[in-house]
Length: 227
Image (cartoon, rainbow, N blue to C red):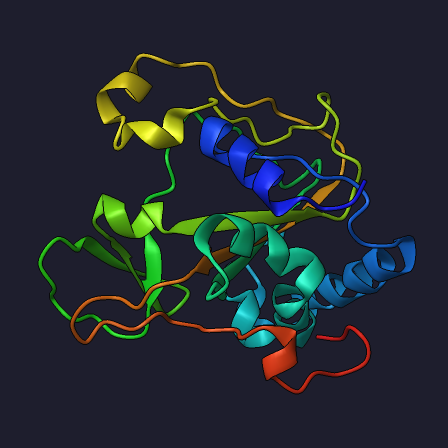
């Protein structure tokens, strides 16, 4: 099916998510699998015995930089937040039998920035993997969108991400989320996901996004995927 940005944006505004299939070809997925398979061999991405998540992909994996800039992926962001969209963060999730977890319902509410600069409305500063994280005002998050690229089949029996349709329109739901105690399914199958976050606006004051990956037609890029 041809991509219809208006139709996609309409679904997204209503539900807060959209599922698209067969965006990348089999060979492209295989290239990405090989690229992320190299990540555990790098010292900066080891975590105890199992590598189940890598935070700073845009800094350490050129393959993901290329992916985030590609029209086939970026178009899902531009349809929602506009043509100025640029990638600001990417995370790799790798769920396997010995590196698995369950989550209660929650809202992702932090962004990654270059430096800690106290700014009105930005709260809860912390550092993860050497990068400053902060909770911005709700309007900053409202101007962002995440695109998740699955490298494995992810049916209802393989621990998929679950979303409460329309919850993105309700702001912070801390009190309501406390009432929903059902955890996300624990799965034993392999589920590798590249999670890419996009923004279209600058941060206020002197704050800067930790990364900024431009569209592919504005940058020089390699011909294949490597990390």
